[in-house]
Length: 133
Image (cartoon, rainbow, N blue to C red; front, side, top):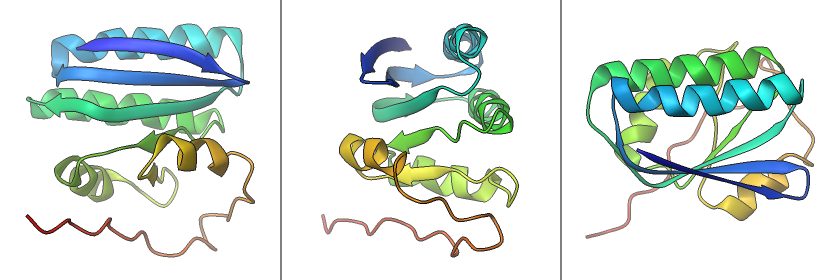
């Protein structure tokens, strides 16, 4: 997996490319830990447009990294998530650790400034509509 990080204003955007598995997810985990060491509550967008997943252990580790970030009250925004990956994330999310998933990077960035609903107030997550093939 290739991780490209860039700064846009006060937000760090991670572009994840390639295959996600147990070996490659550690790169992402280390990048997030370094960021959390510098900034207690960073604004993080994870662009998954060109990410492909391979192993279930990689997905589990990826979800654990996201939960760690959520525990820091950061609520990373996941953008351009494939429908298959979104189904897995929705199945693994909890009320305490919801995933903020958006169709575009712009929507993810704008969501940081939108009012946040508490987990009890949040509506049930909606799946993105599939495009007709």
